[in-house]
Amino acid sequence: MAALEVKVPDIGDFKDVEIIEVLVKAGDHVQAEQSLVTVESDKASMEIPSSAEGVVRELRVKVGDKVNEGSLLLLLDSDAPATHADAPPVASPAVPASAPAEPPAAPAAAPAAAGVEVEVVVPDIGDFDEVAVIEVLVKPGDTVAVEQSLITVESDKASMEIPSSTAGVVKALKVKVGDKVSKGSLIATVQGSGGGPAAAPAPAAASPSPSPAPASAPAAAAPAAGAGSERALPTAALPAHEPTAPTGTLPHASPAIRKLARELGVPLDEVKGSGPKGRITQEDVHDFVKAVLSGAARTKAQAGKGASAAPGAGGGLAGLLPWPQVDFAKFGAIEKKDLSRIKKISGPALHRNWVTIPHVTNHDDADITDLEAFRVATNKENEKAGVKVTMLAFLIKASVAALQKFPDFNASLDGDQLVLKKYFHIGFAADTPNGLVVPVIRDCDKKGVIQISNEMGELAKKARDGKLTPTDMSGGCFSISSLGGIGGRYFTPIINAPEVAILGVCRSTIEPVWDGKAFQPRLILPLSLSWDHRVVDGAMAARFNVFLIQVLGDFRRVLL
Ligand code: CAO
Image (cartoon, rainbow, N blue to C red; front, side, top):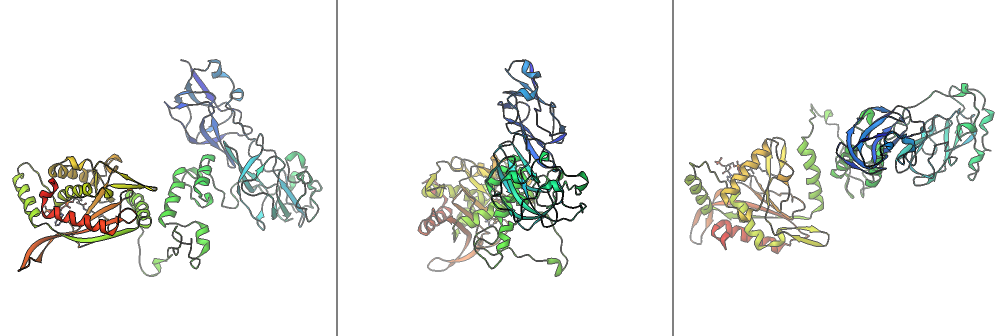
């Protein structure tokens, strides 16, 4: 099958534009019109669609390449007639419906004369028609320069910033986010500063609208701000060109990223771009959301409400005070250290679980004197085989028995329903040099304590070596966090959502236990069961612990 050459179609006056995203890879099946790459100039970005359906044989571009109309993007294995391969992309159905003219270049304008109000309208923006305003970048009172972006418009395939045709102070905005605009639509009235390099008298051709400009002044009455053809300003009157984000707040992102940000309610101008030239990537948007949800960052809107306006003002959560901002260096020497990758991922999840699940923790004690004797004997018997069973493996097996008796603990909430699981996959918290991970041992109901112990050893090693796969950590029904090898008495483990309970275990110690006649030395294991009060209630949790303690006290009960 002959390969079809897919080239950049007619993209208006876009020249030498950079590819900022490649949206497909070799082997992908693409539809006609499906976006292949995103290109971006300093003021606009656009997705370039495929001219035909087929399978990508070979990519001929990469991120960072500069392309023009006719540049070869990729080879496509397609059933389309071979002639299509050479057909100029402009003739293909793939021409972006909204292929814009080069983002409205600096309109040939000058600072309006001091005090004169000029109506700034949408200039010629190619085939863009009835496009949505997605951002308004200035507000009344702002001083704007010629070419400074005023609004951003977006079609389904491209976004573009519309610059001011004149310098001065914004008097009134005539558009808001969500409005549809076309060539000639009135954007704002700007009162000329009269300053800048064009100290010349107001150009007659600027035809300012009468001052004050009536709000209803038709766009046609504002030639000063219209398309270049409507103005005839002396070039000498042009102020210095300011091509880079003059306000410092213009988000540099592709249409897809802008759409994602709007869907998530992310203020894109507050996101720090990590891409080339500070471009905002999808990961940047996700990281921003995570940071706000975890309380590590606040949006300007949240910060603006201040500490006194407690509701909705802090830490990304309604009703909380903002996170204290302290200059620690004022009090002594400090050192900053990045959180590990695991902590960056697990932190927001732990925070979500802690604040969204109504936790209750029941602390209890289990007498494991006989079980410990059995464990020691088992290890002695299997010493030669290199088998070593720790208390945690018995706890996993005992927990399965308790989950079987109390099925609501082996469940997850799904809206108003409880999803009861018929399988018994148990997660255990493992401490690694980089942070906490929770590998999962599958089908613990079908495995013996020695097998569970062996699998636990393998998973714990993988965890320490940083080699756990997502599969190793998924599918858990219930988790156990054991600090038994370290110490401590009781603690409050955080439920590992979407599970509904977690068992915390600390170090066992010999304690005097009254048997009715005398104190006996018994090995006591402290237990802490955290449970989700939306699913479990206090009585059920107490029964779960009582049963677990009975099993640990006499392990034969596992068989019942
Ligand atoms: N009481 C007394 N001793 C205990 C015990 C308990 N409850 N649990 C384990 N021990 C002993 C073991 O028998 C072993 O003793 P020896 O070295 O004499 O044989 C020693 O403590 C070390 O055990 P271990 O920790 O290596 O093995 P484990 O099966 O108990 O735990 C693992 C394995 C991977 C869970 C553990 O190493 C770990 O990472 N624990 C930390 C979990 C954690 O961080 N939880 C907190 C989560 S919330 O931040």
